[in-house]
Amino acid sequence: MPIELVVNGVRHSVDAQPDRTLLIVLRDELNLTGTKYGCGEGQCGACTVMLEDRALRSCQTKLSAVEGKRITTIEGLEEHGRLHPLQEAFLEADAMQCAYCTPGMIISGAALLKRNPNPSETEIRHGIAGNLCRCTGYLTIVRAIRAAAERMNGTREAAYNATHRTVSNSPVPPWLSFGTASRRGWIPSHFEQSLNPALPGLSLGVFRHFGTAACVSRKRLA
Image (cartoon, rainbow, N blue to C red; front, side, top):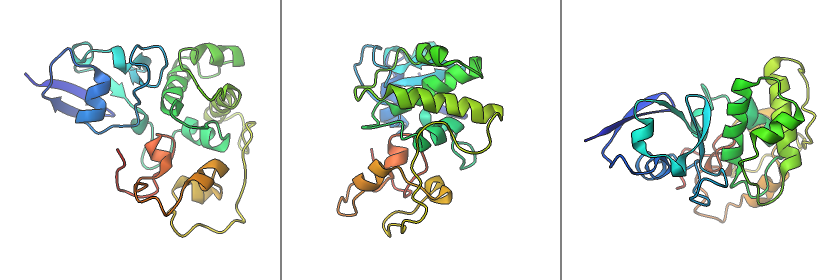
């Protein structure tokens, strides 16, 4: 019997066993690959999604537990082509290295800000305690979440406290069609260095592949 899922505001009828995990269905059936498979035991946070505004480990969640409930993945944070303030803050703060943990970190941060719009640094650290960053980039992650909270609360209009780079005078690489990053006139340096036109598999922007920003092209990279 089909199972009804409501993911990012869209209702899906999925022909799957009720004991399948939400993570596998999101990735394999709905092509929402921003949610990552990490440890498979609910300990690393890479698979985090929001269920009714609450952070949830999708690798340990059966479909039967979420049928008909509102699920939000990293792809669903963007609204009308505009990034969520957390996504923008992570980019401006360079709050990622390999970026594998980034979607889960952002979702956990978004869930935290829904229940606590003005968290302290200690509360932020507690809120992301279940998300592991193997690159140990926690300092900039905490700064990015705090910066997003301030931006969302309207307490600061200009720059984030988090460290960011401005490269507005740099020429635009011809192989990169910019989204939000170009409109702001910057690209995090490690992305700029990693994107390479010689890589034929890079048809989706590294940003959306990791669930953190605007896409480079409309093609999909699984």
